[in-house]
Each structure stands twice: as structure tokens, then as C-alpha cells.
Image (cartoon, rainbow, N blue to C red; front, side, top):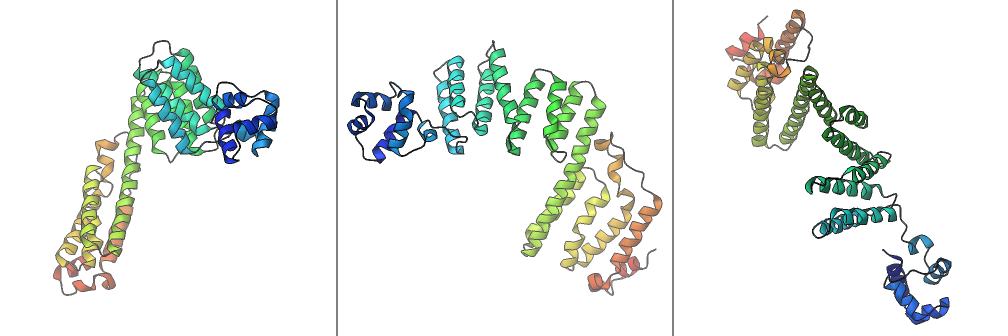
Length: 345
């Protein structure tokens, strides 16, 4: 808000006319009118008396604020977007700079303006970009110092993309330090750099590790959703989620064991003897494929430990011990198939 608009706003709140204000400040009414219509600015020596007369601080009079609300930021960006429709890039660029000079510490506005300015360079295919880009990069760099992690990551992401377009891959890679190890984007970006710089084996390995980790996250999510469905007694949803787990295990080529094992708990809850026996048998038969992902081309550049025979044998024994549990599977008593499984070694 301009000084003139601030003066008008608080003068009216005090039910004071322009003439009354002029008299109390020792100026003319037309002078006050010019301030409010933004045709002139008050003399610097009058700023403190104006603030006292209106009952506001100098910061308020000068509209100095560290931060803007998100709604206010959106309003400025909308106004900037409207200007692109009728004004050349240079005019819009200068307007945006002036806005940032009024709110020099508003990091959210800084980042939003930088993104819009950079996007318009590409959309309008501006040829003389160097001085514009230097300023835009400086805005991103300043945002990297923000105390807000989300803003830092967005700025680092923008700088990474900027230098990737410039094919300055070493510079782009330097911004990966702003992404946590748990952020999948870090691996994706690192893989892109490997791919663009001829390190294809490293790129494949990064993508494969990301794929493998993604399977784990999705599997946990589906299992958690399944548990919620069971608690809600929504068995139709539970069945569909089990199916999705099986489909996902097949899609990610995790091995036959992972495809068949997911439905055992649900079939047991429903005391579906035929399905329970079938899944038990499938799990035992597929134990050799419990590490089936090791043979998948999807993970061909990853290195996995060779499973020891005694380890797989131990899993088999644990499974059989679990299948013999009468508290869980007592409803199968008398079923010859279950009795045979219980006596397997």
C-alpha cells in the first residue's frame, strides 16, 4: 500500500477531513489531496508528525513489512501476470523489481517473482537474457538462506533446473546438498546429472535404487490402508488392496513369493480353508524366489548379498512353525492338506 493510500485509510478511520489534517500539520488541503492521490509525497520532515497524528507507526506509514500473507503474494503475482498481456518484458521486469524493493525480506514473494520472471523469459523467448537471469538467480540464492525449509528446497530445485538447462552440470549438482537423503528428488536429479555427463551405469544404479525404495514405500502404504480397511470391517476394500499388493509385486518383479504371500492374513480371517492352504503351499514353493528381484533386469546395476542356504532354510522352518499354530489355524483341523503341511520338514 502506498503512503498516500495509508494516509487516506487512517485519516478516514479518525473521521478527519483533508482540511483538518492540513491545518494540524501546517500545510494546505491541496497538499494532502496530492499525497492521497499519489501525485506527490510528503516532505521527509513531516513523516513523523503524520504518523503521530494518524496514530500509527512510521513502519505502517511507509508500509514496511517483513512478510506478506500468501493471499497478498498471490495478488501481486496475479497483477504481474496481467501485465504480461499488454506490456513488454522489460517493463514488467522493472515493475517486479520495484515490488521486491518495497518488501525486500519477503522470501515467499521473492521466490514467486523469480519463478514467474524466469518462466516468461522462456515463454517469450527473450534473446538478451543475461542481466535478467543474473537478477533472477540472485533471488533464488537469497531464498536459499531462508529459515523455511520448503522455500529453500523450491529455490534449490529452481537453481538445479536453471543450470541443467545451461548444461553447467557441476554447478547444478552443487544444489543437491539442499535435498535430504530421504527426498526421492535427490536421487532423480543425481541420476539426471550422471546421464547427461556420460556416466550411464551410475545413472541406471540411481534409478534402480529409487525404484526399489519406491516399492518399499508403496508396499507399506498399501499394507497400512489394508489394516485400516480391516479395522473398519470393509472387506471389499481389503480384498482390493490385497490384489493391488500382488499386482505391484509382479509389476516391480519382486519374485513369486511376494506376489502370493499378501493374501494369507485375509483368507485366514475369513476362514477360507481352500485359499489358506493354497497360499501356504504357494509360499513354501516360492521360497526359492523370495529374493527373486535379484534376477530382474530392473535392478541389474544393483548389488545384493547372496542369500545363504541356511537363511532360506530358516525362513522355511519359521513358516512351517507359523502354519502349525492352532490358535491361528485351528479351524483347519481335520483338513488333510493342513495336516500334511504341519508334518513337513
